[in-house]
Length: 184
Image (cartoon, rainbow, N blue to C red; front, side):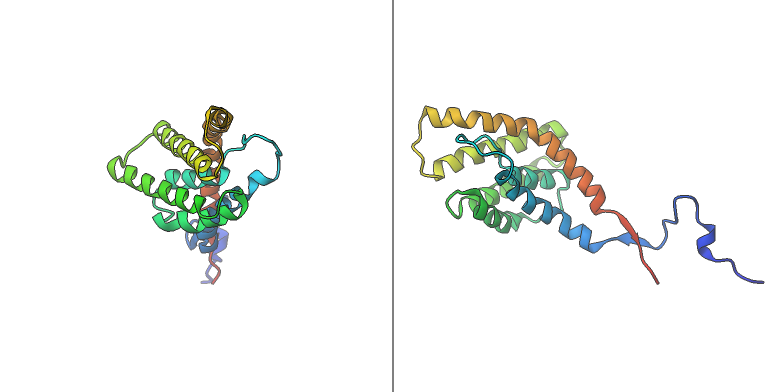
């Protein structure tokens, strides 16, 4: 008796057997999206006041909060170093701020392992607001009410933009975990 080809017995959606995650996608997508988001604020808007939020930091926070075990705590150092090259801040400020953000999230995650999206949103916006304020202090600008009033639109835009970034990160996470058929 002749055996039938195993591919002919598949359902309409294809077999789920003999499929695995792509290691390239699984490891590269989070890092590449954070690096791309770090460069993204340079392109669309040229303004005298800082209104574009730190999209790279927000993407890092979204990846860390949406997929908690994916990025190690030390990831803030190299990603912050890349962001320092494009942010215009003194070199080392994003290294410090992104590393501190990762440590703060790790401490919060240890204390409160079960959170909702609203709590993650508040955590991310709190970290971004503190980062914007600290970056303004580290930049060497004269501190005063006009500087802090100029930072308010950036913080408010970060507040409104984080859910969109978190949704994009969750979509990219599904893309990252695509299953590919192993040949052989």
